[in-house]
Image: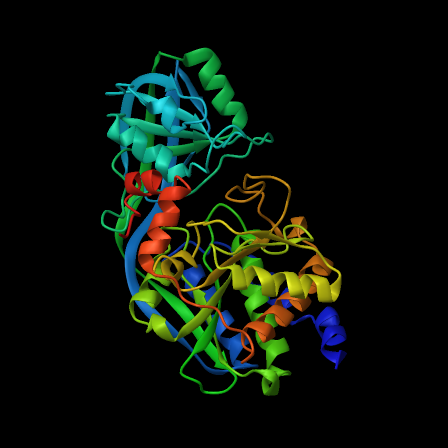
Length: 433
C-alpha cells in the first residue's frame, strides 16, 4: 500500500501547524507564548492520537531587557544571551578569535571582556559549543563575554548560558553580529569597553506535550521535538518545523496504526533552548529500559536531505539507510555523538537515539538562533518529502522485526572521551558520569 505517501505529500496538517507556531510570536521558555504553542500542539495531536496532555514543570525564568556595548564613546548593537545575569562590566577587550580551547590556554583574562566568534573551523578536532567558550572565559576570570556571529548580514546570534545546577550564568553575556564583532576587534582591541545587560529573573513554568498511538506495549518508541524558540525570531526552523513534523507524523501514523507493533509516544518538549530542561524532566521520570529508541527532530526541513546522527548505534544507521534506499532519496548518516539536543538526556543513559536535522552542507547554524529564523526560509515541498521518509522510518522502528540494543552508560562515556567531547562537557557542567 502506497496511498499514504500521496496523502502525506498533499497533507496540510503539519505545515498549517508550523504556521500556527510562528504566528504566536515569542515562544521563549517559560513565556505565555511557549504555553500557547504547547496547548496548540496538544490540541493538534489530540486530533490523531490518544491521551494528549501537558506535563508542567518549574524552570528558571528569564526575560530580556535592553543591552548595550559601549566602546570608545560609541554604542554597538547587541542582544543579551538568555540566562545571562543582569549587570554591567567593564574591562579591556580581548579578541580570542574562534574561542577554541587552545585560544584560552594559559591566558589570564582577569577583568577582561572576551570576544569570540561562532565559528568552529575545519581544523578544529571537534565542535566547540558556545557554552564551552563562555565557561572557559568564566574560568579564566573574564568580566564579560561577547559572542559574534560568523555569518554576515547584521544578525546578532542568541543562545543560552547557564548550567543545570546554576541556570543563570556567572558573567554578563551578549551576542553581536559579524560586522559589530569585526568592528570591535579592529577598533577597540585592548581598550576598555563596557557590557551592560538588563534582564528579569524569577520562577517560571514550562511544559511537555504528550500523546500516543499504537498498541499498548510496555516498550515504546519516542518521537520528539521541542516547541520553545528564542524570543528574537519566529523559530521556524529551530524548532517549529520539528514540532510541526511530530504533528504530521501523528496524522500519518494514525492512518497506519494497525502496522505498528510497538507503542509510539509523541513528546514535544518545553525549555530546550535553555539547557534541555524539558527532556531532562521527562527522562528523569520515565523508565528508560522501556524506551526502544528516540527519534528526535530538531532542524528538519532546513534543506532537502535529512541528516541522522546515530550516536554509535549501528542498527539505527542501517534502518535509516534502508529507508533512503527504498525511496531513492538520500539520508546522511553521522555515526558519532551529538550531545546538544533533547535526545541526549536519553542517549547519555544508553538509550538508542537519533538526532534528525537537515544536511545543509554547513557546520554552523545558518539562520538559526538569529532574527532571520523565519518561515520564508522553509519550503512545504521539503517538509512533505521529509514527512514521508520519517513516517517510513518510524514504522520501521516500531516493527517487531527491528531490534537495537541499549548501550552501557560507561560505553557512552568512553565514546565521549574518544571523540574529545568529555573535556568540553566538563567545562559546561554537562558531564553526567
